[in-house]
Image (cartoon, rainbow, N blue to C red; front, top):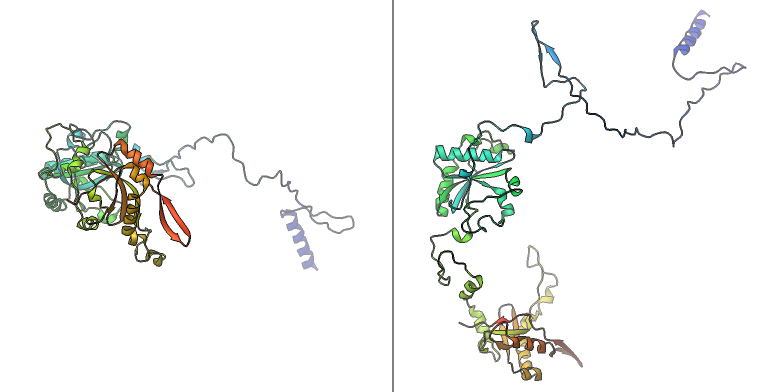
Length: 428
């Protein structure tokens, strides 16, 4: 009996101090259920805390932990240790870091690449990122003073995508010796620089120089760590041959003889490309000569230097992938119109020779066969701007010729004259 009373009193005492809803006693002695806790409505209850519109002031930098030195000495501060849960300071901008030690302070201009170097050179090292120009200058100075090599600094971004820039050699005037750019272009060439060595007249000389340069391990590249671990500490073993980017292609071999068709011009004279192109005679294909000799309307019978193409017979073409043998619809190409192009062109020329419009113009039809097509031409003209050429073109647009017959149906097609005159080829 005492045990039951003690257990009941302990349960009442624990219920009095325990948290939770209050149990109400009904008048009849039956306990009521706990009242439910009020819950705000779904439209007024926020699902997530809304940030304040006022800007939050930056948190002050946490004070570093002060540690007491052992032995009762003065307290020392460690600037790299912070309290748990403290806000760490923002990272330092790499552009605000100071330059590495031992970088040169002398002018850069004496080490910049000019058109006098080369024409063949060796690329020894490329620097990228902050202070790339000064690092490249330090390497050039070391190569000049300690290894007696003609070293130069070149900005890679002066030729973006290996393309030339107007006003920069080799597209600049002959008097421009070096590549100098002003703002804003100059602000984009300071983060990538390359060091080149050598004034090699031939590729063979540059190859010998490259073999010697690959064995060097200058101090300027000792602390230049690469993102590729296997390249660190390797020196200049990745050197390769190149040409002076400031030189034009025709200046790479200054000792070679000029072409016999190239005119001899005085110093400072300007070459007209049209005049120079007219001096070169293309090589005659012997197969093309055999195709056009002996035909009744051969282009070789045209006395004038120009004629007008009015029709062309050629074969089909298709886009193929890596394996040209896998062409869709191979049977379609078995009856290629190129098989009958020779006969079709000769037949059209014979028809045009009897046409009343062609006879009224007083011109003769001609045929020219090459490896890929057969062309039908009308008339001969002394120049591509001959006023009679336009008259023949307009008249040719009105001519129809028969292409094929299917029973009683006849298919016809208009001539399609070219927009420009055609240079008449010669067998020799």
